[in-house]
Length: 65
Image (cartoon, rainbow, N blue to C red):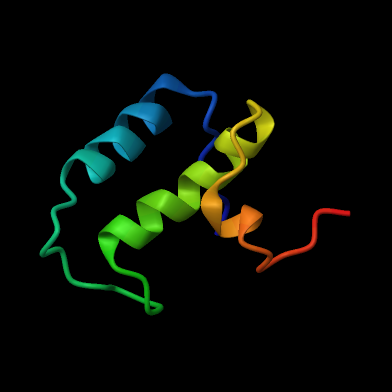
């Protein structure tokens, strides 16, 4: 199955609609992350790219060098 392009407006709208539907009580559909953990996980690349490394990476869980 091909994933939709994030550069298409319809794909972005669908993704934002799914994110907007999340609540703290949204059940897991796969994996072990809660919705809050998943959102934090999705933000790590952006934080790192824009010079704000997350505490997760700064805690030494992963080597950056």
